[in-house]
Each structure stands twice: as structure tokens, then as C-alpha cells.
Image 1 (cartoon, rainbow, N blue to C red):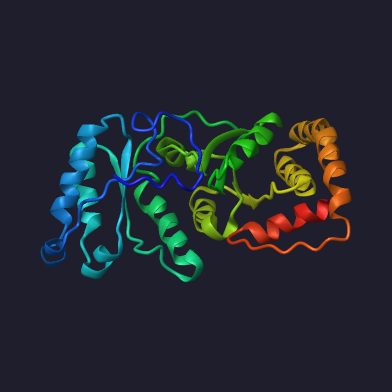
Image 2 (cartoon, one colour):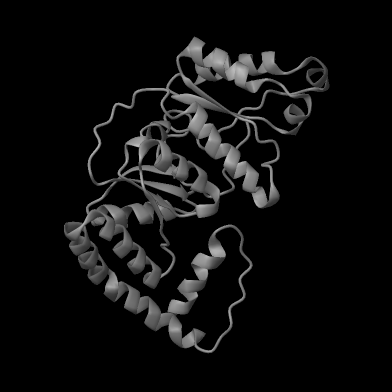
Length: 279
């Protein structure tokens, strides 16, 4: 059992009971498995997970570098065990999170959702006209929760927030949304484009870093849903204005004339720059 909780992907639930975000099992891969294959060990491991954690809704399989070298058929194992246990099992063949700056790894993960999660089970879910998926927000430090508050305060229903604090059920019902909202475009544009092509769900990017971008994003999102939502968005912006003003007045005098150097990766540069410009 290996925990990847050093990255602050916060989530709701009781770990090991109804939430498994920071839990990962290894199959104790040894030298002999490189020679003879590790698929039997993988099958046994899935059975053990099922016995230890019967409340799980599904299992994802991540192949590491030795698997990539020997070519174990994790897809065949996934199909076999999904049928045996009547559970969703998702094989992700992404050794070393492939590609330049992880770009291929993101693409592979998107395709795994498309091929192994969507349309596999009937989602027990009643959609509404105001349902949105928040995609490409990993809830680092609780970012996604803050976004969810703003979106729901203007009358929308966030039916899935993935992969940050997402459940398998949320991902399964994603094709029933009215609109997809993408925070990190680079990592998850593939699945958004697929949902647009197959299910007719439009998508738009949004940016919740800094007050000016939050306001612009809320207005863009609200415009999609019409006048009633737009009125709620304006009321929301007005409600938060004193808080924004207080923060700006506190920090702006210390930052006037200063130059900021950013050492960041992923989606942060183009999003965070505008937050500094606000100050």
C-alpha cells in the first residue's frame, strides 16, 4: 500500500470506507514476474481489493515502467475481473506518465475515461438544465471546492468535479451535463472535445485566479444560461466586492512598482499572471 497524499488533493469521505483517493496497492512485482508476466498477480490483487474494501465502486489499474517493458495485457485482466465482480475496472497504460511535460499521459488518461467509464453503466441520475461538469481542476488545497461554491451560488448544479474530489459516479454521469467547464485546458481538453462530438455538450474555459478573471468567467458562464443566471452572477459579484477590495487595499501598496518572477508549471502561468495584475 502506497500513499500519494503528499500532494494536497483534498477530498470528501472516509479513507478506506467510501473514499480511496490516497490509497494505492502494488502487486509486489519481482524479477520472476518480468520473465513470466505479472497478470496473475494483478488478478489476485483485484480480488484482494474486493475482499478488503467491498464498498468500492471500481478499480483503476496504473501500469508502471516494468509493465510497459514486458507488455502485460492489463486490458484483458480488466475485462475479466470487471465481469467477475460486476465492477468498473479501468486500465491506464501510462508508464512514467508519458510525453513531453506529461502531455501524452493526460491524453491517455482522457482516453481511458472515454473507453472504460462512459456508457458502461446506466447512471441513476436525473439531469437538469443547469448541470455543469468542472473538468481539469484537481482540488489542490481545496481550489475546486471554492469554485463549486461560486458556481452553485449563481444557480448552477455541479454534477461532477474531476478529477479533484470526484467519485466514479460523477464521472459516469458526466455525459448528462448541459455544459463542461475546463480549468486546465491542456490536461483535459480531449475528453471535453469527445463529449461535444458524441453527446453534443458544449464546453468553455474558465479562470478563477484573481478577482478580474473570476468576474469575467462568471459572466461568460452565466451568459450561456441566460438572463436569470446572469442576474444571479451580477449579484454574486457585488456581494464579494467588499472582500476583494479589502484584499487589494491591503497588498497593493506593497506591490506597486514591483516585478514578479514566477516559477510555476502546468496551467498556472497564464492564470496567475492576471491575478498579480489585479494587485
